[in-house]
Image (cartoon, rainbow, N blue to C red):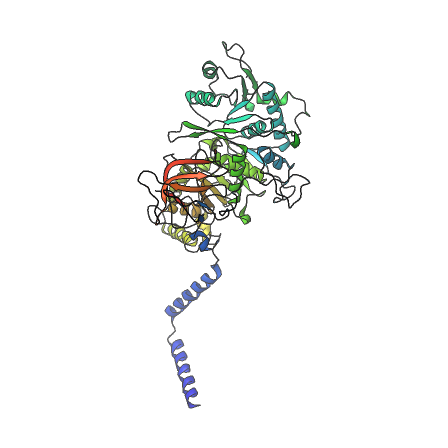
Amino acid sequence: MAFFDNLMLRMDESVTGLFGQWNLYTSLIFTTFVGFLTYQVVTRRDPDTHPLLLARQAQPSQVRHEGESAVYRSQAAPHGMPLQTGLNVKDAGASKWARGRDGDLRDIWRQVVGSVQDDGLTKGATGRILTVMGTDHVTEHRLDDITRQINLIGQHILDQGGNRVAIYLPNSVELIATLFACAFYNMTAVILPFDQSDEAVISMLRRSAADTVVTIPGSFPFDTVVKSYPSLRQLVWVVDEGSSHMDWNEVPQGTGGRVNVSTWQDIVSDSPVDAGKELPALKDQKDPRDVTVFWQSNNGLPEEMVRFTAANFMSGISALLFSVPASQRIGPSDLFLPADSLANTHTLLLTLGALYSNSSVAFNSVAVQADDLAVATRGIAPTILVATPSALLKTHQETSNAFTSFFAQKLHWLQTRHLTQNGVMPVAGLLSSYYDRLRPALGSKPGKLRLIFTAERVGSGNPQLSSIVLSDLRAYTGARIMYALTAPKVAGAVTQTNFYDYRVFEDASGSHFGPPLTSTEIILKDWKNYKTTNESSQGQIFVRGPSVAGGEAGLGVAGRIRDDNTLAYI
């Protein structure tokens, strides 16, 4: 008993001595310590994804051939299973357990207007289609009106003998409507990069053997094309409201009346009111034609012409949609804005995927050339954005210049720490309210943007987005970023970074393009001085899969497989 009495006495003396020495400095230290522990407990969040899922992002084959690396696939499309080929379209009345069709472009528009219902989407959910003009003029298009335009334009071109339709338009509803018209009326669509020189336009028309052009006045060199390309038989002008009073049906002298000239507005307005309201019956449709696109080189000129089948497109679209986790999928609550040219298949397929997902889609013609995302997003509040790396680099530079104060830099450090150390996206809070006013102005409602797609174009020569820049942009915009690698003969993307991959690599080789999508598999073949060994995989990048034109394509650049099984340039 004496031992316990002495123990209690010493404890009493210790406590009395502690509080006897208590002063202002002790209170400050104690308050700081308790506040730090409270902050850690209250703000603690589990990582958005398990770190092990980022440590091995692709699955290699068990064996490899001499002079080649193993074949790498997405973890969601393991070896022994087929790669993703389509959208799994379920026709009305089909069993919910039956496998759906891969689908084609016609099924996408039927999904938009609700004629085909996919089991994975909410019944009756529809998005809106918008056109942005200026800072405050946003026009909403009725889906029934677009369906009517698809039918009337398609039937008019077909009646005039059109077979190969060149689409030379900026991002617009008319571009998408012409693409669907070609699909429904069994014509070949040829998508030309917009704003090209006269020589480039004539060259693309010759190489694609187009007989019809859908374009806008002022951008298409009609007189020059008629003289230099006698195979042109039909021209459809898309005229804005301010120029609709002019006579656009006039044919230049000396053409001999070979070219049938009409306007989009006249074709639609001169038809009976009830004409074109119903889409052609599904059972009467033939297999869709190919879609031809032109890949632009690093000097901006169209270089390679590629013909994609409907199967290539559907595989690419399904893989891009599947790359977004189920809880974050594109849906009716999203507003999707392509701030890159729809002549790029990555942007085009993402836009078609957004339409199929019943997301609202906005078109802004200035987005074709806009490296200023503030200009491309004005007047609307997108939640999902497709942007070029150059536009993101410009945004990063401008925003970084605004973070000059000590307080702003520390807030940015804290936001970056949440991303890189804790693996979570920062959430809005009291401290972030100061940070919000420094964010880039992307859209009319800051904070709504949640996802940015961007892509490296093989051979473009443009600067890469480093992992540090990507991390900064996530903190600046509050949006996740998926960085893809695209190539001429691949519909969509070759590889793409994980949705939850926020890691930063300090070394110079820290930038990567993620694992393959579920529609592709990649292999590296020995090339020049780049050889694959048992310790490392490097060589020329080859891609195979249902989204690849011809089934397989070499990218003509050297790559390597990182320790986390992601693809990077050497």
